[in-house]
Image 1 (cartoon, one colour):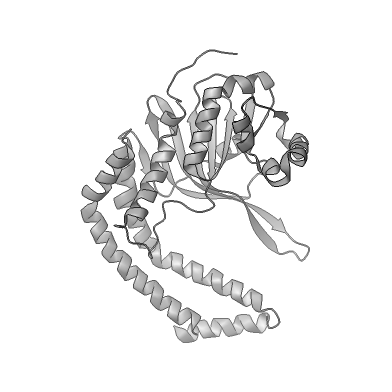
Image 2: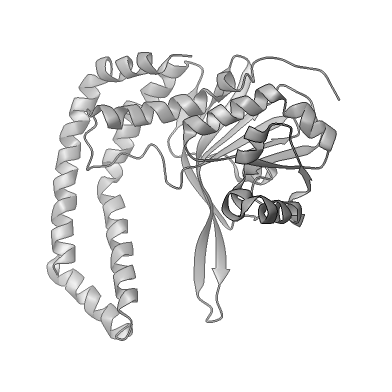
Length: 43
Length: 279
């Protein structure tokens, strides 16, 4: 079985393009959640 | 949108005018429901693009299914939790064969329904965390259950021991030779000899190390040639948070460590070392 450090390398090297793409989506979803929170708790 | 929520709140308020805590509770529940709805697509994509490749990287023989969980009968067969769940939810199912040992695991949330005198239903959690099932490397016919030693840790040795020995629905209390193990765990079973045959000093040491690594309460049982492990995380694992960046080392290592710990149980407990002697 692969070690923790090998898996960490795999995460940052091989998954990097997918993670960067997901990061953009995360920021977009975060702003939607934030907007919803503002509407919901200040209604 | 704003008027919609205002209308809902007014309707709810008219029902619970004298009970603001109900209003707060309903607001939190509605907020959590909408949050889950908003992050659903992101969460699914995260599992497809991050968790699934990570699982394959750990071992090519493993299969990952994000919407499946360990079957209910296996949870019940484990005898780890005496209550039968009324609802069992879960996800992030991983299965496969590592070093010739069959293993499966998933997130599980077992709940029990209670109805109060007013006829209202309440749900309590029996278990929430990671549930692992694997073949065990020894043959045995009975059951041995290893639980966190909550009684002795909470009430001290005297009252704790008395409470443990009077836990009638768990079977016979089995005292182990290792003081270190006894401090962390309590063992019940239906066969003293078999329990000692399974829980060797080496396995007790490995369970202590595994508990230390998981940093959460550990429930382990040995039933009909299988080992069941429940790690009580108290939350759904492998779910991404929109408030934490995926490139942050702390976030990444948390997912990797949890997967490595769960799948590494075969190696960690030496389940791949065949010990085919029979009792």
